[in-house]
Image (tube, rainbow, N blue to C red; front, side):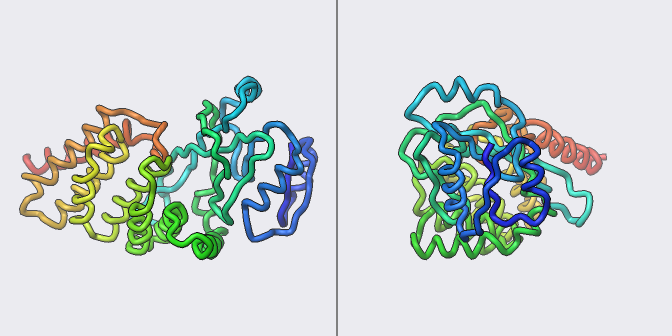
Length: 310
């Protein structure tokens, strides 16, 4: 195990050494890719798995040795990120779990690029491994320490690569995290205009864009986008889950048509989530949208409708 410490102020180095790791130090270079690439140089191994300080192997680690017997490919692992969902209260916010497939198993000589939300710089194919990492870095307490960290780095990257759709996507995520939903929509819209249809993060981008359109009150644009992309995401429970949420928002803004049009649309959308089921292979999918979260929403709507009819 190789640990590269770029400025910790706790017992990171001591604990790592006690666990058998070789610890190196490096002054923070203002770029996560530079730090990652330095750690790969220090490892000097045929294969490496890159894990952040707020991540851990949850399952599947036993598959790594046999997987690395093959060559000419890189490994994408599933990172399960816990986060606290939006809530009207500041306390007792329930946890959710998003799933992202990220290239983290690298052969010798492969490195990263980008100051933050860095990407593997290689044309080798990415192959998914049934290896799962836990990640708690998106919980409120941890995010507060990173509040002002990422955006300046992303803006520097954008100066180097104007109009880059991936950087714009990440800027949208930063704005969304700070509840700047209109700004997030602007970044996501620019990203969609330039992104390749085969980008692995396209699903996450589409779902986030719809969510932020709803949060900013631009429901007409949201439903226009839904109609244009219904066929593409017809097997995504996340897509239909957000449709249900948007339909409820529309019901509140258009009460005259709520019971005739918008409530039935919300019910149909969440029922479609259950028909599709969970799709963990979709980038940015949230666990439960194809199962218990959709069922919870349906039960709540049905209870309200029963109360109205009574």
